Length: 169
Image (cartoon, rainbow, N blue to C red):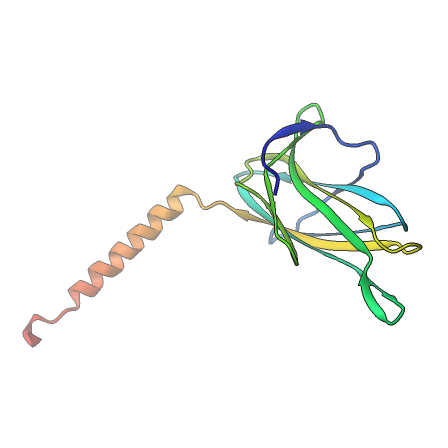
C-alpha cells in the first residue's frame, strides 16, 4: 500500500498501453517480458463523465520447470496515477492485496486521464514471464439515486401499513 501523493514522470523504459473498455466498463491487459529483466509497464485510461471506482486484478504466469509449475514473474508494485496536463504523473494512494492481486485507488476518480503502473521482474534464469489482468470502472452513484431509493422505501412502508386490517385486532 502506498502512503501518499507525489509527482513523478513516466520512466523512459516503461511500456505504455492504452486500455480500451467494453460497454460494461471492463478492460483486459497482458504483457510478456524477456528473461532476467526488470519491467515497468504503464496502462492508461480515461474517466469521461462522472466519478468512477476502478478495481483491477492481476495474475502472473507459471512455467513448467523440472516437474513443477513455478511462477516466473514477480509483481513488486502496482500504483494508480493521474496524468497531468504536462504529461507527468501524480501517483495516487493505492491498495494492493496479497495472493490474488487486487488493486484499487483509495478513492473515486473524477473525469480525467489516469493510469496504473505495474513494476517487477522475471524470476527464473533463461525464462521470460507474463502477467495478465482486468480493470473495471464502476460509476459512483449520484445523490439523486439515493433520494429515489429512500422515496421507494418510504412508499413501501406506507403501503404495507395501509394493508393492516384493524378488524382482526
